[in-house]
Length: 195
Image (cartoon, rainbow, N blue to C red):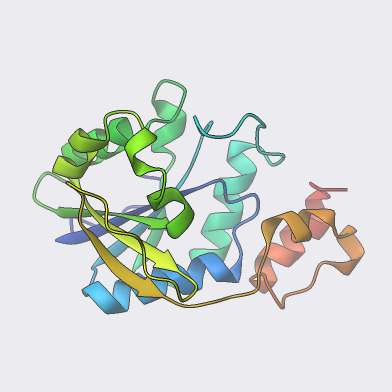
């Protein structure tokens, strides 16, 4: 079920997102979490359809996975997973986490998210059950996450200016590797996904 497998390490963070496209900010956040919590693996999980978003990704699941594999090719501590494409819609986090506990039964699982997602965690489907399956890692740009009764989070911070929205708005000829892995730039120019 894993898109790319590297055994069964002990400390794994699940990093959900649209990844439309994956950019260097995503990698910076994942690396910060890996370093802060001594993670063995960060699994990038592109959402099939987020329950919190009405609009669907522009890039297909296959294209988003292809871009992830290009961006993560030189990162032995990271891989992508197509698990949400194999699970029923919408992509509830607790369903994904439950499935990952079956794939990695001996691992300690974390869920890596942004501070904006953390602020809405109590509105998610079965948040208390999700908290039984994973420990949360919350990334922000300098403002620590608020305390939420019954939920604990590890805090990491850092800032990267990359914006998927701005990347999608660029003409293919002007997409640069300032915010993207060079192989992802070439892929976007070849596929003209956002033109």
